Length: 111
Image (cartoon, rainbow, N blue to C red; front, side):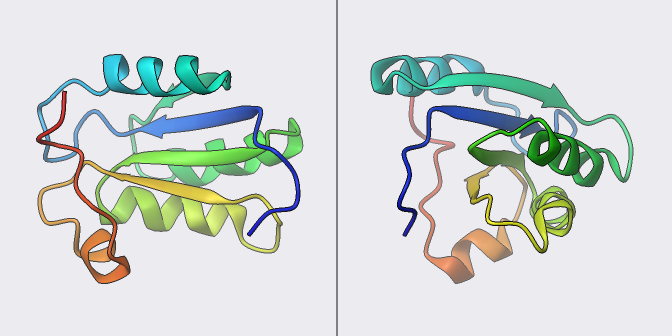
């Protein structure tokens, strides 16, 4: 567990992942209620999530979150490799195998 608060989070969203449910309203409510500053980046092609995660670390972000499928999560994790920046996973893919294996509940049915 981190010994420092998370005040700034960068959220990587893959709009091409399997879930068609909007996530921005859910994120806005959660982060606003928690007093967390957040920014988003939308992936457009392979490698974007890795680059965005790496850039977020350089920018001094406290945490990176991913809303997407297993491929997007793996890319972001690769971009964070070797750092102390935590990764949050918001399952947004079709199968979400990684999330299931890690015991992360799906947010697709929540509003």
